[in-house]
Image (cartoon, rainbow, N blue to C red):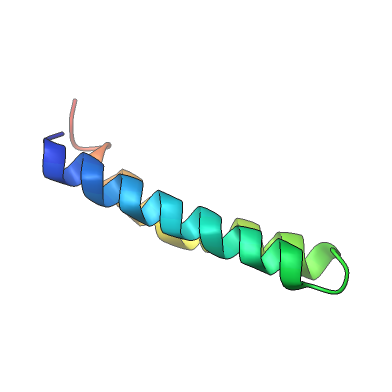
Length: 58
């Protein structure tokens, strides 16, 4: 991976972490739907990035 890919991945990771933090701190209670939302958003965001940049580099 070159530097621009690492910077983009890092930016997306930090943005996702900030949004998860906001979701956890602003929700009235932390229940299954909040945890499911965080896990589902992580899968939706990071699995395609993994497939694009990591899987083909063997």
